[in-house]
Length: 200
Ligand SMILES: [Fe+2]
Ligand SMILES: [Fe+2]
Image (cartoon, rainbow, N blue to C red):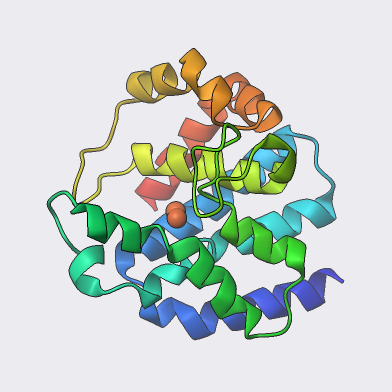
């Protein structure tokens, strides 16, 4: 079972990685590693963690279908450009669906990684009950990794800034309760994992 899944993920990843820019590849591998750490803290089954690990690697794959003029833009995006960027979860899900080897649950981890439990996310404005714990883990780690990294449009945040962001009560209405609680309890392990990846 694990090997079958590993082969499927590997095939899709090897097919698609060549199209992703360096920043997205680095982010995707880091999100995958951090998702495993948080999923373990959430006490998920090994088989479930394995799925999250693989789909987290592919979570931003829809970006290969976005114009590079938008993806590589250093300044802020126009409203129309941002609307285009917000299509990447659906584009990624549709792209992987063509492989005919991912389950609906696996594809939902791609499509739902920008959803928020209060309905403020995209692309489908889902709410808590329709967002799985797996998608909630990918969603919160996606933000954690983005804040921990320097991007073309923003500086890397300090650990103190990141902690204060996630400890803010406003996050309670955005992220699923279990992953948010476990992230708050395990900042140090997550920061350690980020610093190991940076030093590799
Ligand atoms: Fe994304
Ligand atoms: Fe991402």
